[in-house]
Image (tube, rainbow, N blue to C red; front, side):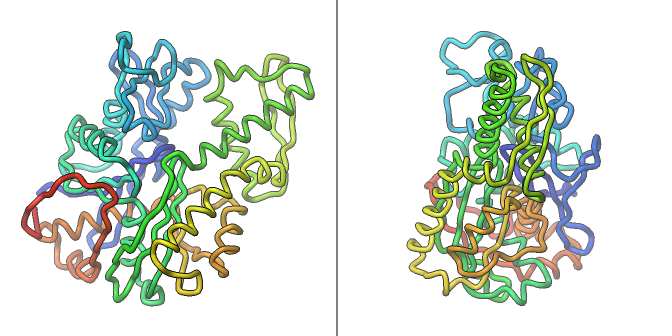
Length: 392
C-alpha cells in the first residue's frame, strides 16, 4: 500500500516527513546531502531542473538560471525567466519560462524521491494563502505525480505536531503558535486539550519572513563595502549571491554579538564587520509588524496574553534573538523551546496524514495518532468537499 506523507513546501527550505513504524513523525533526509531540510532553490535549463544545495551553488556562475522564493509568487500571474533571471509578467513572456506551479513541482518531485512508493500527501500552506495560491499548490503536486489528500495551514500542522508529543500533557489550554519562516509569517491562537487541537483564529503576512531580514543585511553589506572602497556591490547582477551570504551572517549573529565576513565586490574582497545591534536596528520595521499581527491575533481570539499558557515556535527565523525577545515582551513569558523549529510543520503534516489514512496504518501507528484531533479555521473559502471520514 502506498504511503501518505506530509510536506512542508517552504519559501527558503522544504521538508518531507512520514510516520515511523511506532507512529512517531520522522523528517526524511535528502538522498544527496543527508540534510533534513532542502533548499527551495531550483536551477532551470532547457526544461531540466536541479533542486536544493546544488541549485544554490549555481548562483555564483549562472544566477539567472536559479529560481528562489517561488512560494511568494504562487498567486501571481508571473513566470520565471532564465533569460532575465527574475519573475516577470507571463503576458508576452519569451520561451524557457516557468510558472510558479512548475517550479514548485520540481521541489515536490525532489522531496518525493526521498522515500519510496509515495502517491498521496498532505501539503502545508500559510494560513492566509489566497485561493489562487492554494490552487497553484495543488497544480504543482499534480505535476509531481502527487495526489493531495488535503492542504493544511502551517500553524495548524505545527500545533498538530506539538499535540502528538508525549510532553504535550504539560501543554494544555490556549496556546499561540508563532510561525516565522523564510518568506511568510503566521500567528495562530488555538486550544490544546487532551491532544485535541482547535484553532481559534489566525493572522499573518505572506510577505514577511527571514528573506526580508536578509535584504536588510544586504543593504548593510553594501553600505559598509561602499564606505571602505568607494564603490557599492553589484546588486543588479549578484543580489541572490549576496542574499545567501546575508543568511549566513544572520545565522552567525543569532549566536554572537558581532560577525566579520569577507565580501567579494567590484573592488576586490573586503572584510567587513556587522554587529547584532546594527542588524536589529535595520529590521525594526519588520519587528513592529510582527508585534502588530500578534496583537491582532490576540484581539481576534478575545484573549489576553495572561490567558495564553504557551507560545509555540515554528520556523528558522524564530532563532533570531530579537524575535524571541519580542514574543516575550508581548506574552510576558518566554516561548517554549526544545523542538526543532525547522521540522515542526513537516512533522505535523505527517501526523495529520496519519489521521487521514488510519486504515493504512499498523496498530502501533494507530495507537500513537488516534488521540490527536484537529479542528481548523478556514481563512479562505475553496468550495465544499464531501467525503467519508477516512478517505483512504
